[in-house]
Structure formats: C-alpha cells, structure tokens
Length: 227
Image (cartoon, rainbow, N blue to C red; front, side, top):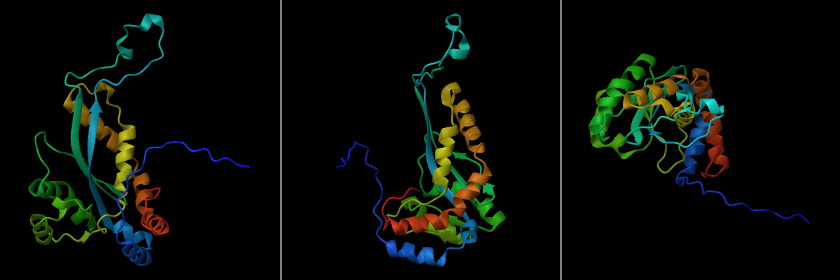
C-alpha cells in the first residue's frame, strides 16, 4: 500500500483567465514563430537593494579585519527604484530609471515611450506589446499611440502574463550583486551591469517560445503554467 506524503508550500497567486477561447484563436492563427519576432516586448520592474544582508564567509583567523571580507552597509538601509526596458528578437533596449519622487502616470509613461520605445519601434519596424496596466490605455495614451502610429498587440484582460521580458527581470535579479552598492549611483550601475549580462541568445529563445506558451495556457485551461 502506498502512502502519499503531503508538504506545505506557499500558494502561487495567478490571475483567473476569463477568455480562454481567445487564446485558442491566437494559438491557431499565430503558430508561426517568426510572427512573435515582430513585437517589441516592454515592461516595468521594481529593483531593490537591501543594505544589511547577513552572510558568512570562509576566511582564516588572521583575516578577521581584512576589508575584503566586510559586508558594506548603507546608512539608509535600502535602495529601490522602478525600471523600464524593452526586448525583441535580436534587440535588447536600454534601462530607464524612474527619477526619485516621480509617480508613474500617463504623461510620464508617454515620455518613457518617446525616449526608449519609439526609436526601437521605428528602427526595427515592430509592434508594441505591453501589459494591461490602466495608465497604458488611458485616453491620453490612446491619443499618443494614434499620433505616433504605434501598432499595439493586447492580450486579454485577467490573463496569465506571457510577456517573455518577465524572465529577463528574473535573470537580472540573479545577476545582481548589491553588496558593494554604498550609493544610489553605484546601485544603478550594478543594475545596468546585470542587465547587460543577459545574453541576446537567451532573449531570442524566450521570444521563440511564445507558441509553446500559448499551447500551455490552453492545456491548463487558462490556469497557471510553468511560464
């Protein structure tokens, strides 16, 4: 007789997919990998630097006061900022850092698009893919898209986030080593370094996985997927 052993895990929170049939239609029509290479995938991410992380080092007794083994602290304890960037097949955009004291709204977002996104869309002849944040589809932004001839691709509301740039944020955080970031400028430079270390080959692979992502959504009937 077999006995199932259960363990307690943190519950994964995923949005409920309302329009599964929309994904079926998308998957049937857009199975060609090259189709997903015609988009510029965009997103924002919050990057944080915790100043006083406990840790251990392997050293000899005589190195007790060697600065090499010190954990540098920051007076105010924490750096945090919102960053924005874009990716496409064969392209990785620069990072944009939200200025301190700034709140993201339609006007600020339009400035980001004008500075970071529009040049890439025009240079590479791409369509824009972004999430369904309210400010992205305000009346002000809709007028901005029309005025700048921006072609949008929009996933259904309340749907799993299949944007491949989400995986890039995870890679950035895994490449990010904040221990030496004793100032905000050093923190920003470390974030940039971590972003630049993400290989373009990985980005290309993520984008080419879009058909499989859609198939997985259908298989799971709109529930959470491995992506």
